[in-house]
Every structure is written in structure tokens, then in C-alpha cells.
Image (cartoon, each protein chain N blue to C red):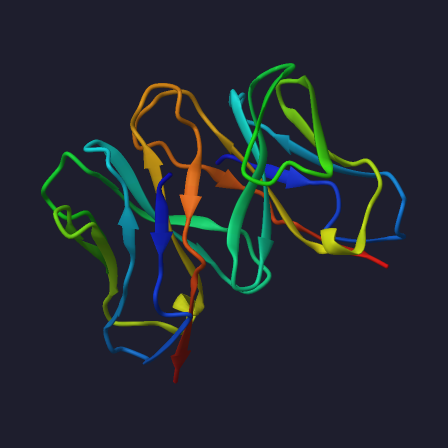
Length: 114
Length: 116
């Protein structure tokens, strides 16, 4: 079974802090994603990566950056956390191919910025 | 840009009954993929069912089936013999089949409650 893990289930940070959210997958997937989930808004894509050191902006990249130094690990960075970044963050990975290939999701990190 | 609309923010069903969750999407493409994902409370999101647009036959996975109407751009999910474990948020998602397209576009979700 594919396993996608996230470093924390719950995180509380202060405004202005630099925040790192880590995601690790164990299936050698090329593609990894970071989403933000808010009630009534569904999932919105922040960034994705299709290979090591490669990244592309999603729909809401402002205020975020990412790092992918190793294939299995994809980090989301909040350079200076703000209260409007309080949300649930979901990581996902997907194997190769352009067919109807599913994304596998991690358990999520609920981040609160105070 | 493609959009996915789930018009029912919340639905409820009695245990053992059947419920249908609606999803419509907007696209100018002819080839794409559609998915339904389930997110149980405090648990990981998992794939329920998937459909390739070029296949006319509706996908089925045990108690879960879809009604895919390509011309109407509709992709509804039917859950038969509902169980308490079906209670979850359900998200409909679209992905283009264009080469290099990795992005999933999600609807806003439908919260399903199953009453005993």
C-alpha cells in the first residue's frame, strides 16, 4: 500500500514565524502535491512537483514556497506565517502515467496561526 | 479553466437506503478523467471511484457507481445500501488528459450523513 505521511497532525504557530510542513511518500512517486483545504472552498492546489528540484505553482502559491531535494520528500514552507494561513494542509503523491491514475493523500496537518 | 460544481453542501441518508451525490463540471476538452474521493472524519482522503471520459460505460465499485453524462457534463455518485461508514465528505475531481497536465480540480465537497 502507498503510504503518504505528514510530519504533524496539529501545529500551532505565531504570526511571522517560518513554518515547515513535511511530507514523505514511500512509493517512489514522481509527482507530489500540496493542497489547502478550507470549509466551503474544497481543496485548492498550492504547489506541485513532478521531479526532484522541479516545482510548479498551483492556484494559490502566494505566501508559500516548496522544496524537493529528495524524491520521497516534499516540503511546504510558510516564510512568514499569517493568520489567514490557518487551515488544513494536505499532501498527495501520484505515480507516473497520464491515465486515470489516482492521487494518494496524507492524513493532513491542521495549522493554526495565532 | 475547468471548474467542478457540487451543488449539495450536505446530504443525509438512512442506513441501507440509496443516495446520489451530484457533480457537474465545465470544460472545453473532450478527453479527461473524473474522480470521486471520500474523506471520513479525521481520516485520510481515499479514492472511491474513477471514470475515463472516453469510456461510455459507467464505472462501478461494489456499492458505489457513477452516472456519467458526458454531453451534460455531469458525474453523479450513487451509493447503494448506505452504511454508517459511508459518512464522510465526498469530493468530485477533474483532471485533464492533456499531456503534462497533473492538476486535479476539486469541487467544494458534499458532507454525507448516514442515519441509523
